[in-house]
Image 1: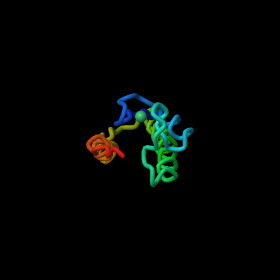
Image 2 (image 1 turned 45 degrees about the horizontal axis):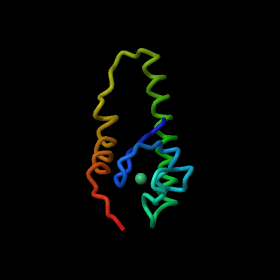
Image 3 (image 1 turned 90 degrees about the horizontal axis):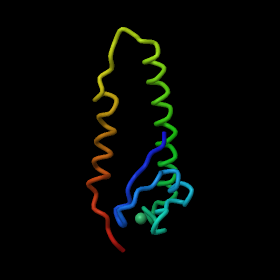
Length: 95
Ligand SMILES: [Zn+2]
């Protein structure tokens, strides 16, 4: 899964893989996105992309089987939406 985001400091878009490659820094302003937890951030971003790809593949495989059910979107996406909203709402602290 190619996850993208927007830097709260400069407003520019980035791909998560750019942040992973840059050791947790914004590819545009070069500042760390989480100065005290860069390693945890990079590891979690990587885990999110891998897990997202697995979830996409599993759901695609399920859909390909055309089973006699549908899945409740909120049961799959509900918590994900909450975490993303939490990220969106968090105010950036300028150093
Ligand atoms: Zn930036």
